[in-house]
Image (cartoon, rainbow, N blue to C red; front, side, top):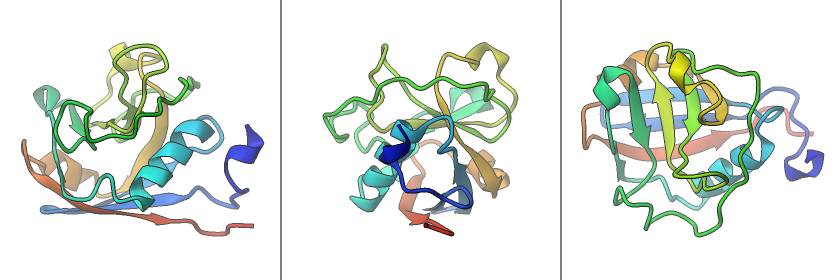
Length: 154
């Protein structure tokens, strides 16, 4: 698992630019290296550029990352589930799953504490800046770009 990502002196960051502003996610390489690797690959391949907000989940969670909302725009390779002690706290970024080991690129952001989501979806990041921007995203709003910032790559 250690070979999946380079050693980082601090977590890699994803800066997500939307039509409402930007927010930054610290990616969790310790507990979710496979998921983070796929997320970074998707971002670098521009899979997330110009994708809509897919679902709002009653103001508790937003679903992002799928251009058509049916997974047809996502890479065909599924990522094996990675569960950790991380919880679905406000700002938690979770990998969306249809079934076991089925993560392909959709992701969700918890807007509040969601205890019923603990261990249901792998948590692979945390919004560090701009959670208010994520809260303000309406249905069908758009991610313009996702930029990966990797401080301290050794």
